[in-house]
Image 1 (cartoon, helix red, strand yellow):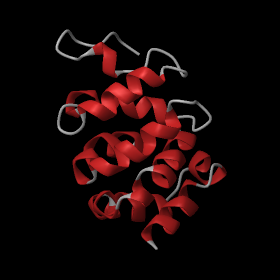
Image 2: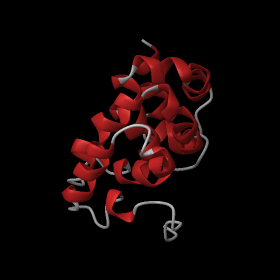
Image 3: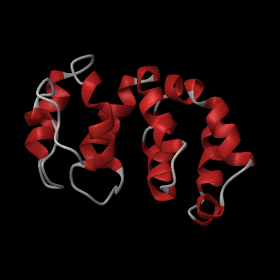
Image 4: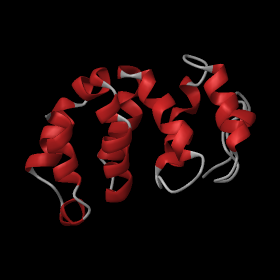
Length: 130
């Protein structure tokens, strides 16, 4: 990950997978203070086994529709495990985010790549669509 720009408060971005202080600081800062941090914060829910992912996921989901552009970038990428985690841990927790990403979810459900199918992105997308 590239170093954050000087305008991004580094103390709100975890430095490692056990950096719960940074997660709590990001949560305390809240929305919209974390807007410039969304792509960096999403990186910390790539692996839900990381301790920072557990408190970060519900906070990010609570942002709702404004999170859609950052999530869409991941859904358009090649990391199938990250896609599945975002759908299951963020999109399914936020009706507003799910609505904002409905077309993306339908696309992933109907036309998954081989890696998306292997990691069940298509199934997660179908589940999210209800």
